[in-house]
Image 1 (cartoon, rainbow, N blue to C red):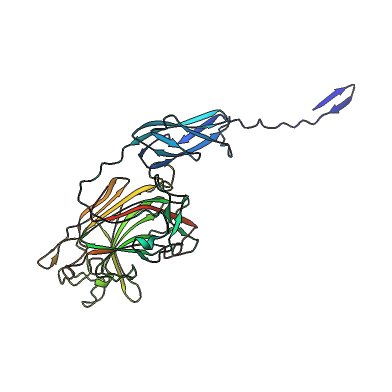
Image 2: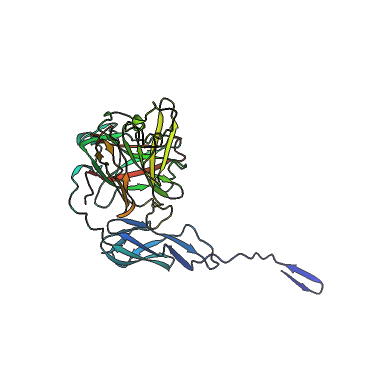
Length: 393
């Protein structure tokens, strides 16, 4: 700026600065969500100034107008308590945003029928006293657990690691033609799994023909329960019976369905099912052979229903097929539920042929595995695991 009089001037330097940002808007996402009582859903709050720009580092206070129905912690994690509705408010510098939460009752218990075989709540590390064997050095987390629990099992992958810090816990159970698994699971916010269209492996169920310490990659029957993460977690059930592959009729793959019952049920010797993916490839000392059922994306990458960093409830059920006159019948069952919703439901599965009419389920294994190495440092937590002969409350 300058001032002039009688040819003489004076100046002053003026610096104009932008007006400081003022909080004008708080946006909560998602704006509405439904959560089952006892489960959680994570909300996020975004603070913006008078120009619509995001302001970071602001203190946000969370509150619920109906805490008997839903509570919220300082990180925006909402816990459903009982069925009903609540409004969750995020406040920063006197401005607020809200989200509507509907809490639904848990699904009704299934009809009686399943018999509990064993259960594990991971309240302490002394799992060997409860029937677990092999690697019993499980990592117990008291920081992460479901409501009503005090601890969970943590499986922590370091970057590049193929197995987590605790892995390969086994538990035998009374041989059964059916198998039901349920558990709560939570993944770290940066969870990407294998980063590939295959793996990580997570849970395995082995048969009476397999040894107590047999590895889970070459078996007479191994059923995998796992989740492949590709911008969201998809449930995957795989059935592997590599030790049943018949090599005597020529080069693999070789469809032997109409030839002999002395064969595998996967891709190397032919599959009786349709609309199912299979593999058959040379694994070096043997051929790897399986078939897979993959569901839609259930574990979501962002906060909201099914968010991977919330506790979610997984159930899986398998019923072996029958054997009639020495021939395996395609009437086995594979089912998978996510937070009480049935998302995989097949009743035409062949688990075993007439060559193994007495084969049953008898061994459960927790052994997360990423063959190419974990792409990031990431964790999963497991709580309140149940194994039974059928679906139970």
